[in-house]
Image 1 (cartoon, one colour):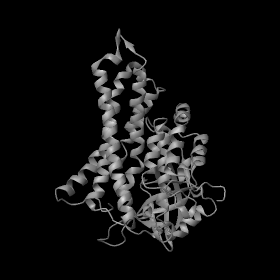
Image 2 (cartoon, one colour):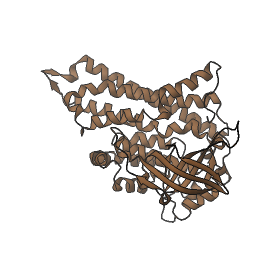
Image 3 (cartoon, helix red, strand yellow):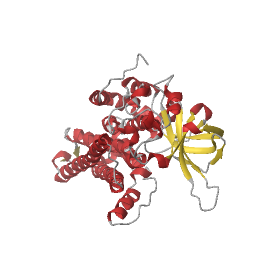
Image 4 (cartoon, one colour):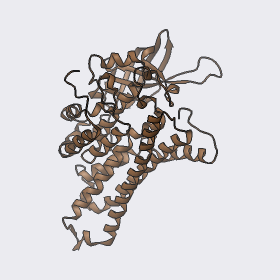
Length: 396
């Protein structure tokens, strides 16, 4: 740990991310063809400290303010949204592990403070069995972004009830990746370079100290708070999780709009008309810029509130939590609208698979498909609470 930079500021992290954009642009096409970020990009992210922005300081992390991972993705994603996604998602797992018991954190980081962690919150019908001293996992999990560059994985596992009337328990289980088989399944039209492959486990035992009940992560002290007293590790996990994703869609949409603006500055002529002089084109660009700016403002307002409440020890209300998810869902909706608004300006060039605007358009839509950002889901919970209805998400 002696050679590890542990005093990197948020501003410095974001400066490094901004400087990396041209490199990511150059690598974006190859990354898409490989269906994962290149080894060089993974190493660049490690050297810059990106994966450690939310990792506990006690274990070699930077422990920066919440939302640094969001801003990181916003800065990186104009170069390559898949790369921005992998950076932010991998970084957020350091935050998540900081909520686990100390013994689990020590096992991961004591020997290697740069050890990175993947996740999968979607199991395809796995078998989860409570056994003496822990859990036994068997089956398949999917959508594990950046997994090929990690050494551990957090899996969401549902323990079925053993008695009538009991409810199933949702747990997070931490597993070494050398006890999993990575299956190369990631064939997609968007976020193609995230390498979000499947994992297969065969009768893997997970000891109790590497298991956390999701009901313990709803705000307030967590099992990790004993060694990580900072506010980061007491935030409501489910209510704030979408901040790990929304930065990529804001950055991707912003990059798309800026690419179109740069294109228009070249006085593009179609059928004898200068596109930059068409009022309809100007209106498209103006609206799109405003939509992206509004999306950022929604995220930023809530991120600032989360930090302030966290530092003061105030736990967000249920309405606050629903609003955080609602606003990130709406920010995503605005970003999709912005990209769809300007994409037709590209004409025939925009349907070329290797075109950067085409890639950004596909990536933006792919991000919007994540369940944590899906408008129909996040809007209904917030609206129900707003009119005095029930909360349909017990983990919120």
